Length: 300
Figure (cartoon, rainbow, N blue to C red):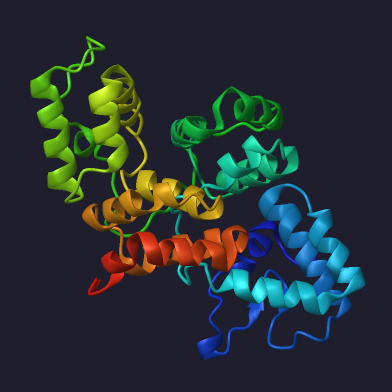
């Protein structure tokens, strides 16, 4: 390896071309048409240290056409915070649904390397389970073999300033001892959305009218999931997943929830930008159509 494990993990931190910092994950991205042996080795070593293994699909470009890889990594690097912090990420769900075992392992290793505790990891997995379902959990269960999270990591996870656990923010006043949604509870549910995001999403009205037990049991999961993670992890994770998967219907509510719960505009846009690594420009059109008005006039 070209450095200590910690140095290799930190190799992407502080990437900022505007101040001349062009090296990202070992690659000098200021010179896309050239690749030194040292760069190639540093890139491979970074992935092995940070994510538990190198990525053969990316390493392939090192040998075949490194310019393609460097231009890809330049795009990806500009979607990351200059000051590293954990924000929501829908990659685990995306990989799990598709049965991409190595990808799920990659994410789990990354969490552990960044100081995510066992309690936090379980809540991240619970969020993934919402969309991954039993099929995705089969992949996660297989990928998680041999990967253990510490109860209290020596160097704990770092979240953006102001992010904090707040289970009460999720609570709408529903009584989950019954699966039935009373008329007064429906009013409470509508009031929660109006007070929190300023509007009632279409699925909420539809389900409350036609399948009230299902919206109530959905809310039971939503309102009783994040006891250890910052509340902001929910909307950033869900926004990431929907952008990554090009699912327009999940975009607006989560952008509104990001704004309501104190996620900065910059962090919301970084979440979107990173998800666009897969969603690409087609998903950017969805964001403009679904939530372009929310970003207008939004000042951190």
